[in-house]
Length: 560
Ligand code: TEU
Image (cartoon, rainbow, N blue to C red; front, side, top):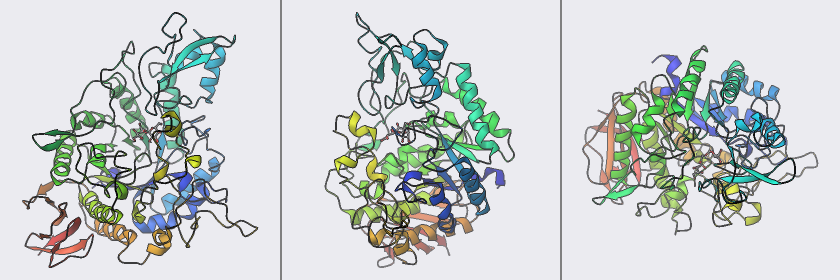
């Protein structure tokens, strides 16, 4: 297809920069480390990178609290380093997406500092969502909205005269004040940020909480704040939860912003692209972000949250393809990211409960061998589907969630904000093991005194077999499965984009054919299953047994 439509079937690798590779030896990943690992990424066979926020930030939420959108955090490198990375990635055939955070800034952003100093009623406060409190002395928050990280979504400020004063809205941490998208200056400034990076050759943006920017007039309380929504059981079958209007998620007014952004992206040659991070379960609602004059793609989180259940997976895939296809948009599949428990560990649990999804499974008994088998089967399913797909750093090594990080190293604001009841997302953010047999597994270089600085989060002592070095060249490794799958996908025109036809298969087994002639079959069940006749095996997630698929195994097939 048209090379300008590369995003319709691209495989994009998520670089969580502070945990990817440390170039300068301070224990924190950085741009220099990423540059040194570009050959690994090109060799893996992905088409593009998405890099989590690398802007100056006090890191109250790992860089999702941005103090300056048009600069680089010194701990990650300089603007020159960023430009060199873009150049080298492009030379290696990799496109680069950055991460834009439009819902909130850092509380150290110049706008917020100014808003605090300027006091109530000032124009500077209008860039944010300041309100007087309720109660006789304004001592109660303006409404009952809860922050995603726990507790009230409102924080009271001390006014310049020293008195307790107004409250400001923060859907996430208090260090992440929500900006006011009704304000023309806010809109203009974010558009300038897009242009700043597009002018430097950035190929596109992942949009953080793309469905949250606009809040309902009057800020009314919400009847049902449960989010993300869990699947429900209907007549014994799992179905995704129905959509409900919400005062701050998925408001209709947000689309106008993206129509403006699309015009900017389209004014570049080649056109720049967007992927929305929008936790919107209902595919008709998600498709609205992907109308021809809005965003290009959006992560499918219903798929990410799906339990390992044949009927539910097929239901989610079908609905997604139908609804997104109706607006001409490709689907975007994702199994893991920096916000959810790694899927090897999710799949290691019983998948029985309707609520079995992202974090809730942790703490239940785990069978990591089973989790790995399912994860291997899942990647052939994911990369066999029409559309684009994301790979979260380390999943190609089969990394599990690190569930036993000591409490004193936990860094995710969720831990504090939940009153130490939710350990948060650090377990999927542990630095990548590259080589060697003990921490830091080549994550940081040896320092001049010969010693190695330990990474910002400790890595498990038993990851020696999970390093890129150990897996490279081992035909049974997760890394070689990813490489082989990406090689086949790349060599087969029309693999990514285009339609799918479901095969009629036994209960617990799902499969489909593609126009390329390839078929993908996944044995989700716990029993052995014969392969459909008329096909040869191109690639299987684990060895076949008696010419068929053992439990939790998948294969790519080609008709003979
Ligand atoms: O995440 C959006 C978000 O709401 C997530 O916190 C998600 O719902 C949750 O983690 C699911 O378990 C984005 C970023 O990806 C995340 O890292 C940021 O913390 C958040 O926005 C605020 O910017």
